[in-house]
Image (tube, rainbow, N blue to C red; front, side, top):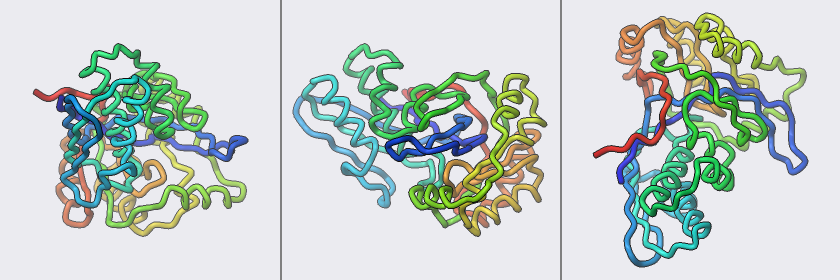
Length: 287
């Protein structure tokens, strides 16, 4: 099986507290976007997990969520098999776009189909949370309200074909460091999650753009984030906000034409500059 594993952005991201076991509680709007890795997956007789990637900077051992997902699925199902995986990487790493989590969710989805295991999407999502807080979302896709540590998901009215440009410089941000910086904030101004939910429910694009926000922007300092936000707004974006714990920044545009013009102009100035659209369905199978 060969499938597209789509990335996400956080239209809004707020940290609302800390759980008893030390995890941060979130209120976030997750949105699938048309930037994707391509996962090739096959199962044969034998034993072991074999992962390769066209990007030499990506680990292909137990540090990789896709590898962990293959191992977890075999343990959960009790199946003995040899899993062969290859990731063609297009989602930038260290961007806050969930590339590793998307690939891990893709492995669970793909193995469930290849092995005819018959697990429901909810059962796969329950399994996925063991791989990371945002992995369950990628088995859901579309537009979703994430609460808890990210595992409590509410499906929202999909906002399809919203034109975006996503920029990322060379800098990446450490997620653990970003959360430590959040913990040090005094009297932070939190994103208006209620307004964002209203914007999505009514498909009010102006309210959506006014409501896009990310608490992590108050906590971290990254020149590439500042530079990307400035560049997007100067090239016609209606808003420009960092996604996840960084360091990619997305801008929402009036139409796809203006988004493509912006991405073309900025591709020489950023390591990643891509015009894309919001998506609803994850894991599109490729012939």
